[in-house]
Image (cartoon, rainbow, N blue to C red; front, side):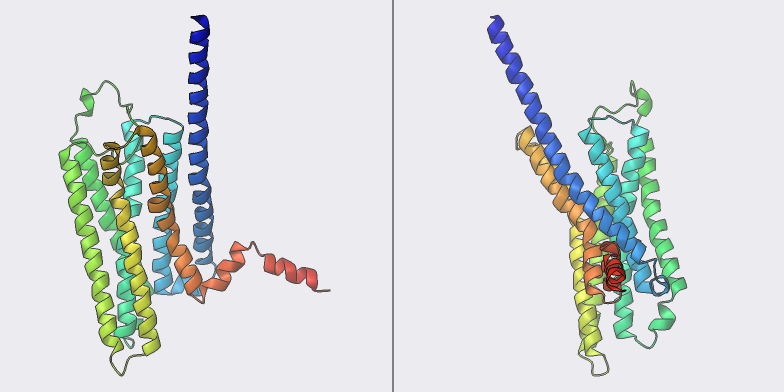
Length: 320
Protein backbone atom coordinates (compact mmCIF):
# COMPACT_ATOMS: atom_id res chain seq x y z
CA UNK A 1 0.00 0.00 0.00
CA UNK A 2 2.84 2.33 0.88
CA UNK A 3 4.64 1.44 -2.37
CA UNK A 4 1.45 2.18 -4.35
CA UNK A 5 1.01 5.58 -2.70
CA UNK A 6 4.66 6.41 -3.34
CA UNK A 7 4.29 5.46 -7.02
CA UNK A 8 1.22 7.67 -7.39
CA UNK A 9 3.09 10.51 -5.72
CA UNK A 10 6.02 10.10 -8.11
CA UNK A 11 3.70 10.04 -11.14
CA UNK A 12 1.88 13.15 -9.90
CA UNK A 13 5.17 14.97 -9.30
CA UNK A 14 6.40 13.98 -12.76
CA UNK A 15 3.19 15.24 -14.39
CA UNK A 16 3.47 18.53 -12.51
CA UNK A 17 7.09 18.87 -13.65
CA UNK A 18 6.12 18.14 -17.26
CA UNK A 19 3.29 20.66 -17.05
CA UNK A 20 5.62 23.30 -15.62
CA UNK A 21 8.24 22.53 -18.29
CA UNK A 22 5.65 22.84 -21.06
CA UNK A 23 4.35 26.12 -19.65
CA UNK A 24 7.90 27.45 -19.53
CA UNK A 25 8.53 26.36 -23.12
CA UNK A 26 5.35 28.00 -24.42
CA UNK A 27 6.14 31.13 -22.43
CA UNK A 28 9.59 31.32 -24.01
CA UNK A 29 8.14 30.76 -27.49
CA UNK A 30 5.80 33.72 -27.04
CA UNK A 31 8.02 36.04 -25.00
CA UNK A 32 11.09 35.84 -27.27
CA UNK A 33 9.22 36.87 -30.48
CA UNK A 34 7.45 39.57 -28.50
CA UNK A 35 10.77 41.01 -27.28
CA UNK A 36 12.19 40.89 -30.82
CA UNK A 37 9.16 42.67 -32.25
CA UNK A 38 9.21 45.21 -29.43
CA UNK A 39 12.83 45.98 -30.23
CA UNK A 40 11.98 46.48 -33.91
CA UNK A 41 8.98 48.69 -33.10
CA UNK A 42 10.86 50.82 -30.58
CA UNK A 43 13.74 51.20 -33.04
CA UNK A 44 11.25 52.25 -35.72
CA UNK A 45 9.68 54.79 -33.36
CA UNK A 46 13.12 56.18 -32.56
CA UNK A 47 13.91 56.32 -36.28
CA UNK A 48 10.76 58.35 -36.96
CA UNK A 49 11.93 60.94 -34.44
CA UNK A 50 15.56 61.02 -35.53
CA UNK A 51 15.15 63.29 -38.58
CA UNK A 52 13.21 66.50 -39.08
CA UNK A 53 11.70 65.21 -42.34
CA UNK A 54 9.87 62.50 -40.39
CA UNK A 55 8.52 65.00 -37.85
CA UNK A 56 7.30 67.42 -40.53
CA UNK A 57 5.75 65.02 -43.06
CA UNK A 58 2.13 64.00 -42.48
CA UNK A 59 2.40 60.37 -43.58
CA UNK A 60 5.35 59.77 -41.25
CA UNK A 61 3.48 61.41 -38.38
CA UNK A 62 0.52 59.09 -39.02
CA UNK A 63 2.88 56.12 -39.24
CA UNK A 64 4.36 57.07 -35.86
CA UNK A 65 0.88 57.16 -34.35
CA UNK A 66 0.08 53.73 -35.83
CA UNK A 67 3.32 52.23 -34.52
CA UNK A 68 2.84 53.80 -31.10
CA UNK A 69 -0.63 52.25 -30.76
CA UNK A 70 0.62 48.85 -31.98
CA UNK A 71 3.55 48.93 -29.56
CA UNK A 72 1.32 49.90 -26.63
CA UNK A 73 -1.08 47.08 -27.51
CA UNK A 74 1.83 44.64 -27.73
CA UNK A 75 3.18 45.68 -24.32
CA UNK A 76 -0.19 45.39 -22.56
CA UNK A 77 -1.00 42.05 -24.23
CA UNK A 78 2.34 40.59 -23.22
CA UNK A 79 1.94 41.93 -19.68
CA UNK A 80 -1.44 40.22 -19.37
CA UNK A 81 0.06 37.04 -20.78
CA UNK A 82 2.89 37.05 -18.22
CA UNK A 83 0.40 37.71 -15.41
CA UNK A 84 -1.69 34.73 -16.55
CA UNK A 85 1.44 32.57 -16.89
CA UNK A 86 2.43 33.40 -13.30
CA UNK A 87 -1.15 32.48 -12.27
CA UNK A 88 -1.70 35.87 -10.66
CA UNK A 89 -5.28 36.93 -9.98
CA UNK A 90 -5.81 40.70 -10.20
CA UNK A 91 -8.59 42.82 -8.77
CA UNK A 92 -11.38 44.04 -11.02
CA UNK A 93 -10.23 47.71 -11.00
CA UNK A 94 -6.63 46.85 -11.96
CA UNK A 95 -7.74 44.40 -14.65
CA UNK A 96 -10.26 46.94 -15.93
CA UNK A 97 -7.56 49.59 -16.38
CA UNK A 98 -5.27 47.20 -18.27
CA UNK A 99 -7.96 45.80 -20.57
CA UNK A 100 -9.45 49.22 -21.32
CA UNK A 101 -6.01 50.56 -22.23
CA UNK A 102 -5.53 47.54 -24.51
CA UNK A 103 -8.94 48.24 -26.12
CA UNK A 104 -7.98 51.90 -26.64
CA UNK A 105 -4.68 51.03 -28.32
CA UNK A 106 -6.34 48.35 -30.45
CA UNK A 107 -8.93 50.77 -31.84
CA UNK A 108 -6.39 53.44 -32.76
CA UNK A 109 -4.85 51.24 -35.48
CA UNK A 110 -7.83 50.91 -37.89
CA UNK A 111 -8.72 54.60 -37.53
CA UNK A 112 -5.12 55.61 -38.24
CA UNK A 113 -5.10 53.33 -41.30
CA UNK A 114 -8.14 55.24 -42.55
CA UNK A 115 -6.28 58.55 -42.18
CA UNK A 116 -3.24 57.15 -43.96
CA UNK A 117 -5.43 55.91 -46.82
CA UNK A 118 -7.12 59.29 -47.17
CA UNK A 119 -3.70 60.97 -47.22
CA UNK A 120 -2.60 58.75 -50.13
CA UNK A 121 -5.91 59.40 -51.91
CA UNK A 122 -5.43 63.17 -51.71
CA UNK A 123 -1.78 62.85 -52.80
CA UNK A 124 -2.77 61.03 -56.02
CA UNK A 125 -6.14 62.54 -56.88
CA UNK A 126 -5.44 66.13 -55.76
CA UNK A 127 -1.66 66.56 -56.04
CA UNK A 128 -1.80 70.35 -56.41
CA UNK A 129 -3.90 70.74 -53.25
CA UNK A 130 -2.12 68.09 -51.22
CA UNK A 131 0.25 70.55 -49.53
CA UNK A 132 -2.63 72.81 -48.44
CA UNK A 133 -5.00 70.02 -47.31
CA UNK A 134 -2.55 67.60 -45.69
CA UNK A 135 -0.65 69.92 -43.37
CA UNK A 136 1.12 69.13 -40.12
CA UNK A 137 -1.55 71.01 -38.20
CA UNK A 138 -4.44 69.16 -39.87
CA UNK A 139 -2.66 65.86 -39.27
CA UNK A 140 -2.26 66.65 -35.56
CA UNK A 141 -5.94 67.59 -35.31
CA UNK A 142 -6.92 64.33 -37.04
CA UNK A 143 -4.80 62.26 -34.64
CA UNK A 144 -6.31 64.05 -31.65
CA UNK A 145 -9.79 63.35 -33.04
CA UNK A 146 -8.91 59.64 -33.42
CA UNK A 147 -7.74 59.38 -29.81
CA UNK A 148 -10.76 61.36 -28.57
CA UNK A 149 -13.20 59.12 -30.46
CA UNK A 150 -11.52 55.97 -29.15
CA UNK A 151 -11.45 57.40 -25.62
CA UNK A 152 -15.17 58.07 -25.85
CA UNK A 153 -15.73 54.40 -26.58
CA UNK A 154 -13.59 53.47 -23.56
CA UNK A 155 -15.65 55.78 -21.34
CA UNK A 156 -18.81 54.08 -22.58
CA UNK A 157 -17.33 50.74 -21.58
CA UNK A 158 -16.51 52.13 -18.15
CA UNK A 159 -20.13 53.23 -17.64
CA UNK A 160 -21.33 49.77 -18.67
CA UNK A 161 -18.93 48.20 -16.16
CA UNK A 162 -20.18 50.47 -13.39
CA UNK A 163 -23.68 49.08 -13.85
CA UNK A 164 -22.46 45.71 -12.59
CA UNK A 165 -23.30 45.24 -8.86
CA UNK A 166 -19.71 44.92 -7.58
CA UNK A 167 -20.93 45.65 -4.06
CA UNK A 168 -22.68 42.27 -4.01
CA UNK A 169 -19.36 40.47 -4.47
CA UNK A 170 -17.55 39.13 -1.43
CA UNK A 171 -14.28 40.52 -2.77
CA UNK A 172 -13.01 42.52 -5.72
CA UNK A 173 -10.40 39.83 -6.27
CA UNK A 174 -11.00 38.09 -9.60
CA UNK A 175 -11.57 34.35 -9.66
CA UNK A 176 -10.18 34.04 -13.17
CA UNK A 177 -7.19 35.48 -14.99
CA UNK A 178 -7.41 39.05 -16.28
CA UNK A 179 -8.61 39.25 -19.87
CA UNK A 180 -11.09 41.05 -22.06
CA UNK A 181 -13.42 38.04 -21.67
CA UNK A 182 -13.34 38.29 -17.89
CA UNK A 183 -14.21 42.00 -18.05
CA UNK A 184 -17.15 41.49 -20.44
CA UNK A 185 -19.64 41.48 -17.59
CA UNK A 186 -23.28 41.29 -18.58
CA UNK A 187 -24.98 40.91 -21.95
CA UNK A 188 -25.14 44.67 -22.54
CA UNK A 189 -21.33 44.96 -22.50
CA UNK A 190 -20.99 42.04 -24.91
CA UNK A 191 -23.63 43.42 -27.30
CA UNK A 192 -22.09 46.88 -27.25
CA UNK A 193 -18.63 45.48 -27.87
CA UNK A 194 -19.82 43.45 -30.87
CA UNK A 195 -21.83 46.32 -32.35
CA UNK A 196 -19.00 48.85 -31.98
CA UNK A 197 -16.42 46.47 -33.43
CA UNK A 198 -18.60 45.78 -36.49
CA UNK A 199 -19.26 49.50 -36.99
CA UNK A 200 -15.57 50.38 -36.65
CA UNK A 201 -14.20 47.83 -39.07
CA UNK A 202 -16.98 48.12 -41.65
CA UNK A 203 -16.50 51.91 -41.71
CA UNK A 204 -12.73 51.55 -41.98
CA UNK A 205 -13.03 48.96 -44.76
CA UNK A 206 -15.42 51.18 -46.72
CA UNK A 207 -13.12 54.21 -46.36
CA UNK A 208 -9.98 52.33 -47.43
CA UNK A 209 -11.75 50.56 -50.31
CA UNK A 210 -13.21 53.86 -51.52
CA UNK A 211 -9.75 55.41 -51.47
CA UNK A 212 -8.41 52.46 -53.44
CA UNK A 213 -11.16 52.78 -56.06
CA UNK A 214 -10.51 56.53 -56.30
CA UNK A 215 -6.81 55.95 -56.89
CA UNK A 216 -7.58 53.29 -59.51
CA UNK A 217 -9.83 55.72 -61.39
CA UNK A 218 -7.24 58.49 -61.11
CA UNK A 219 -4.53 56.16 -62.43
CA UNK A 220 -6.39 55.91 -65.75
CA UNK A 221 -6.30 59.66 -66.18
CA UNK A 222 -3.64 61.03 -68.51
CA UNK A 223 -2.76 63.85 -66.10
CA UNK A 224 -1.95 61.52 -63.21
CA UNK A 225 1.56 60.35 -62.40
CA UNK A 226 1.40 56.62 -63.20
CA UNK A 227 4.27 55.65 -60.91
CA UNK A 228 2.83 57.57 -57.97
CA UNK A 229 -0.64 56.10 -58.55
CA UNK A 230 0.76 52.55 -58.77
CA UNK A 231 2.71 53.00 -55.53
CA UNK A 232 -0.33 54.49 -53.77
CA UNK A 233 -2.49 51.58 -54.97
CA UNK A 234 -0.05 49.06 -53.47
CA UNK A 235 0.06 51.04 -50.23
CA UNK A 236 -3.73 51.00 -49.98
CA UNK A 237 -3.76 47.25 -50.57
CA UNK A 238 -1.32 46.88 -47.68
CA UNK A 239 -3.65 49.01 -45.55
CA UNK A 240 -6.47 46.58 -46.33
CA UNK A 241 -4.26 43.65 -45.31
CA UNK A 242 -3.36 45.44 -42.07
CA UNK A 243 -7.03 46.13 -41.41
CA UNK A 244 -7.84 42.44 -41.88
CA UNK A 245 -5.09 41.51 -39.45
CA UNK A 246 -6.44 44.02 -36.93
CA UNK A 247 -9.88 42.48 -37.44
CA UNK A 248 -8.43 39.04 -36.71
CA UNK A 249 -7.61 40.18 -33.18
CA UNK A 250 -11.29 40.94 -32.60
CA UNK A 251 -12.37 37.43 -33.54
CA UNK A 252 -9.64 36.00 -31.29
CA UNK A 253 -11.87 35.98 -28.20
CA UNK A 254 -15.01 34.39 -29.79
CA UNK A 255 -12.80 31.82 -31.49
CA UNK A 256 -11.22 30.83 -28.18
CA UNK A 257 -14.62 30.60 -26.48
CA UNK A 258 -15.88 28.24 -29.19
CA UNK A 259 -12.66 26.24 -29.09
CA UNK A 260 -12.73 25.83 -25.31
CA UNK A 261 -16.06 23.98 -25.59
CA UNK A 262 -14.83 21.40 -28.07
CA UNK A 263 -11.24 20.45 -27.14
CA UNK A 264 -9.37 19.34 -24.04
CA UNK A 265 -7.83 21.88 -21.69
CA UNK A 266 -4.23 21.03 -22.63
CA UNK A 267 -4.93 21.25 -26.36
CA UNK A 268 -6.77 24.51 -25.82
CA UNK A 269 -3.78 26.08 -24.03
CA UNK A 270 -1.43 25.01 -26.83
CA UNK A 271 -3.69 26.40 -29.56
CA UNK A 272 -4.19 29.59 -27.55
CA UNK A 273 -0.44 30.20 -27.47
CA UNK A 274 -0.15 29.68 -31.23
CA UNK A 275 -3.08 32.04 -31.89
CA UNK A 276 -1.56 34.61 -29.55
CA UNK A 277 1.68 34.73 -31.56
CA UNK A 278 -0.01 34.70 -34.99
CA UNK A 279 -2.95 37.01 -34.25
CA UNK A 280 -1.64 39.40 -31.60
CA UNK A 281 2.15 39.57 -31.75
CA UNK A 282 2.95 39.26 -35.47
CA UNK A 283 0.44 41.87 -36.79
CA UNK A 284 1.73 44.42 -34.26
CA UNK A 285 5.15 44.31 -35.91
CA UNK A 286 3.94 44.14 -39.49
CA UNK A 287 3.74 47.92 -39.89
CA UNK A 288 7.41 48.32 -38.94
CA UNK A 289 8.49 45.63 -41.36
CA UNK A 290 6.32 46.90 -44.23
CA UNK A 291 7.23 50.57 -44.03
CA UNK A 292 10.79 49.98 -42.86
CA UNK A 293 11.53 47.87 -45.93
CA UNK A 294 9.40 49.66 -48.56
CA UNK A 295 10.12 53.29 -47.74
CA UNK A 296 13.41 54.41 -49.25
CA UNK A 297 13.75 57.27 -46.76
CA UNK A 298 13.20 55.14 -43.67
CA UNK A 299 15.04 51.99 -44.78
CA UNK A 300 18.71 53.11 -44.48
CA UNK A 301 18.15 54.88 -41.17
CA UNK A 302 16.19 51.95 -39.72
CA UNK A 303 18.86 49.45 -40.81
CA UNK A 304 21.50 51.73 -39.32
CA UNK A 305 19.78 51.76 -35.91
CA UNK A 306 18.85 48.06 -36.01
CA UNK A 307 22.47 47.11 -36.67
CA UNK A 308 23.49 49.10 -33.57
CA UNK A 309 25.71 51.37 -35.67
CA UNK A 310 27.95 48.51 -36.80
CA UNK A 311 28.48 50.27 -40.10
CA UNK A 312 29.94 53.31 -38.36
CA UNK A 313 32.18 51.10 -36.23
CA UNK A 314 33.45 49.21 -39.29
CA UNK A 315 34.32 52.48 -41.03
CA UNK A 316 36.23 53.76 -38.03
CA UNK A 317 38.23 50.52 -37.89
CA UNK A 318 39.12 50.67 -41.59
CA UNK A 319 40.10 54.33 -41.55
CA UNK A 320 43.77 54.98 -40.54
